[in-house]
Image 1 (cartoon, rainbow, N blue to C red):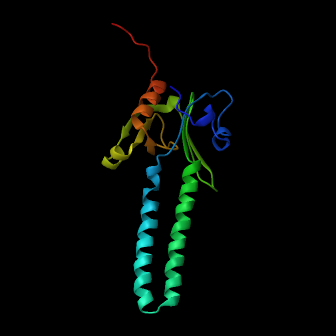
Image 2: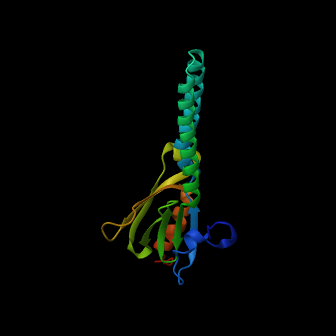
Image 3: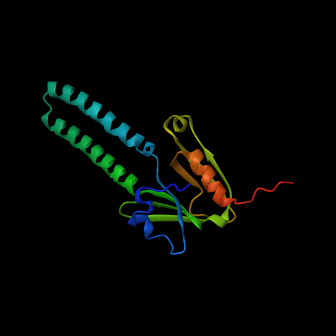
Length: 175
C-alpha cells in the first residue's frame, strides 16, 4: 500500500528533503481537525463582533465599532494564515526515515531514522475517534530526538499498520 498524494510524488516543498536513494512510501497532511480551534475563534469572534455592533450601534459608538470589526478581521487573517500553514505541513515516511515538514515562512524539518525507532503506538481521543484522526507516539534508541509525537494524523489505524510493517519487517515463521 502506498499512501501518497496525487501524482505519486511529493510536492516540491517536501521533495527537496528526500535523499536520492530514498523511496517515498507515505505522505499525508495533518488532519483538518488541526483547524478546529481557529475556526471556532473566527466564528466566536464574529458572534461577539455582531453582538457588540448591535449594542454599540444603539449607544452610538462609531469608533468602537471600527475597532471591533478590525479585531475580527485580524482573527480572520490569522485563520487564513493557519490554513496556509496547514496546506504545507506534511508527515512523510520514506524507506529510510520519518519526516515532519512544517512552517510557511520559517521552514522546519524534523527527521527520525526508521532504524532508531524502538516502539510506536497511537492514541485517539474521543474527538479524534469521531473525526478520524490520532496521534503517533514514537520511542527511539537515542535521546533528544527531533520528534516523539506526531499529532493530527488522518486514518491512524491504517498508517500505524503500514509504518509498523516498515519498522518491524519480519517473515512469518511457523514454529
